[in-house]
Length: 126
Image (cartoon, rainbow, N blue to C red; front, side, top):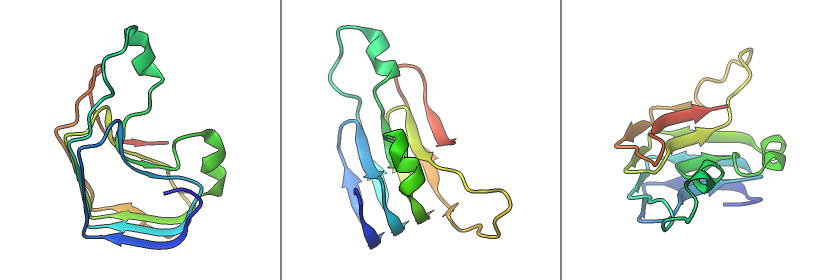
């Protein structure tokens, strides 16, 4: 999902993709709720293992692919989802300002069976 506004994505199954299950970039007013994302594989083997260090892999990537997207994402709600069987990270999401009263931007999400060539991360919040 790129350069989108006003999307409500709920109750879906995103299954068997490489290397990203769902990507939300440069978007506003997005709700990603009660979805199941699973069986997200790494790309086919690379000749040089160090290439995996720069290859983005995750179940749900929220405004994390390309640094220009970080400034353009607003009002995103990632709630009550399940990511199972993802490479590297189940969730890679942008954090919120600690002074904000909004607490429902990222909540109720489950990460299960995350793996990768360098280990797995349930949620990477930056």
